[in-house]
Length: 447
Image 1 (cartoon, one colour):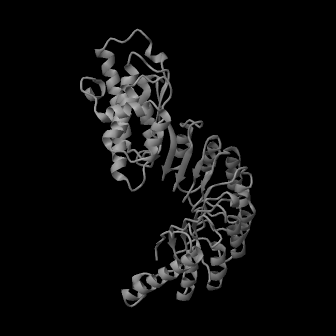
Image 2: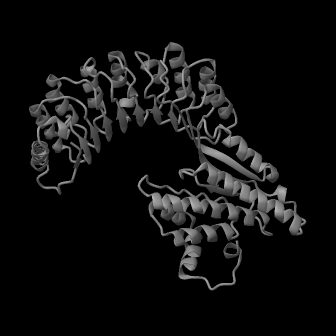
Image 3: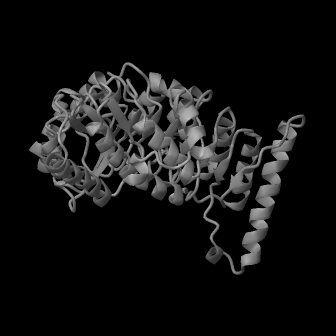
């Protein structure tokens, strides 16, 4: 606490730089979201920004990659720093009218969230008894708002209630709001209770996965979701619920009312002919759509190929659907998405040998494709080599070809190595032929 409060040491170069950077709000946000800064720099940026007399809202966006565990761990420690800074600001003589800390996007452990809020509660309680309060009514200032994400499972199902209990001493002068919420393996009656405890104006992402069979509470939970008008992402994956006409109609109402949803995950819930009912009322096209394990019918794929969504999709997951039954409709869908689709999952799509040539021709038209997964589809060696023509797609960064070339499939590993080597040679041969004058981009071929 002394390091945060005191000004008795000589400011370091990092401190001075932090003060300059923080005075330019847009620059600060750009730096924090774009660069992996050393912990001491991030610490100084946070410390200066919180302790400086700021008269308007500051929003911090700290985005971390999945592979940056050390950075994520550091950010979690900054959460405690932020809590301390909230306390200092809360009790300072010159208080800003508003103050907002946005750490949504950072994966925080339950124990860290509760420990930090408990820390704030204890400090506030101690200050009331040990320091003479300023005559100014503290409760009239604020509120100070903290935005965060939250993951709830059967283990920590009462987490939100615990957070609300810890905030009671602040009497609405400190507010915690949840932007992104993930609920996993929780009974639907409790899911419904959690949804009613949230501020529907704040939540932007709901992920409600693996929560068991449908029932009355499932229907009520879906109807409650329709109130979250600012949702941009909705996931109902792996609930193994057949999306019958009644459920499909409710989902359609959700997408009609929540106009900002661009990311939808229905994976693991059989659609079987009701996709049009779900998506037809959506006025704005989806950008990310996961329909893996959805038992799509030719009717579903035909609707998607003629809908407005085909022209807006950036990511599409059709894995583990029988595209053999709806191959012409699938080709039409690919043709309509050729200008913007970047990520395509079509692994284990039950495609047959006679599909290869038409499939490669269609996929070659995807101008911006960066990731393509065609794995777990049993083609012959010649058909696998036919897919090497996709090397002509200049933007392709990761490619999982249509084969099951595991080492055990052949008598010795050398045979597997030679097949992989030959495929790579063919792949880059087509890339050189297509893009002679430009620098050849490397593709990670996972075969």
